[in-house]
Image (cartoon, rainbow, N blue to C red; front, side, top):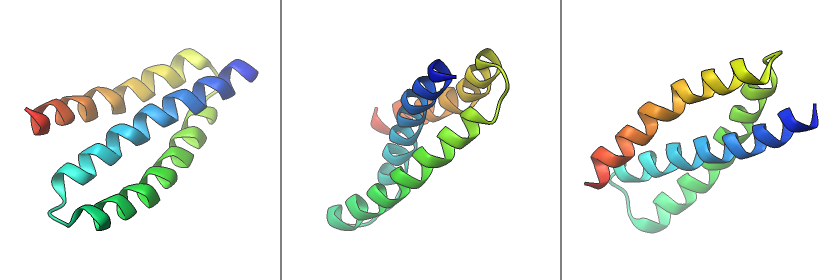
Length: 82
């Protein structure tokens, strides 16, 4: 159970960071508004990703479902940054 919780924290942080970077790169707003929206959205997506991760019975299925969300988000990050 502790391993699942620690992985939920780490994977949730990676997912929320990736989603927040995508959001700030897509929205055409000033930097201060983007920072505020990113802070609020980042916390909410981190909490949601943790709940989503912990809701699975096995760690492997939780990791596989999280990777399904992470790979497209990272691909979008790479596309928007370069």
